[in-house]
Image 1: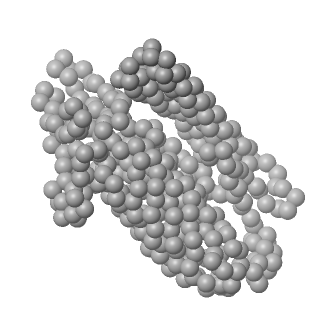
Image 2 (image 1 turned 180 degrees about the horizontal axis):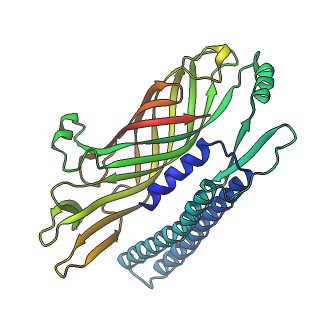
Image 3 (image 1 turned 90 degrees about the vertical axis):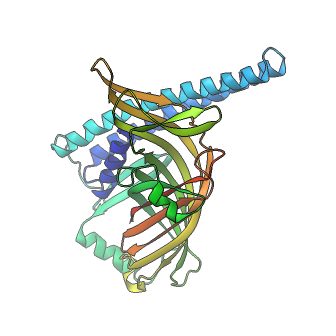
Length: 354
């Protein structure tokens, strides 16, 4: 749930175009701390994996023991990342609350009458500006006879998440997951390049995004491991008020986009259609369970593991819409779980914000 909250916070931050510069500076600091936490934990994991490999090469441990040790250190650092990043997310929530209550004062404008704001994700700094009408008119005159070859957009998407069996759309009707309660959220950054300096509707669009995919089983079920297989089992002793499998992944999407905006109104998108694919990898998987046990105690349980999920994922995606809002569909071509024909499908709304 914490990751869901921070997605909406990031969306709100970019949507208001960073009206308070001090606020944006604090957001940037938190983002840099998150980057540092992730890098530090991953570097530590690499060192430990190398040490385990050296012990294996020297014959101090067996192949099975080495694999077990590597999985243990990987799970440990994944938990550390989630715990430490969670602390920063709570700080971000408090910061947004202070912004809402007007506790953060605005600063003076920059020399060219713009408030320039930055936001960092994954070591890259993104810049947003808030301009008055006069400033917009001046820039419009300078750009009236030119077309930018490459533009950038902040992307936010959300909707419902479910699975298909054997590429059959009809299998959605028999899915063991709740349709409207299984949600996905995506946040990312893209670049769009024209194939020519002259005006043309076809563009190449590419970028990076982070996804939070949730699957909620029906009929009081939860995911369990049976050897090397994953399956759904009914909880007998307790009634589950929450049963949710969440997997987080980092994707690299590419699309061909047809943007039918008129040249003289290039800053105002009209009808847009995008078709493409993506490749990425899982960052972590968790199962969340909530129930009242036999003693009448409320229990909130978080289970860590890969739940037999494929680490690398790839698929196809498409969107179609008007201005910045589109209908968005994403489908994983490779199975969600190993040794199955279960594939993830997402349908929702996508925002591409310049």
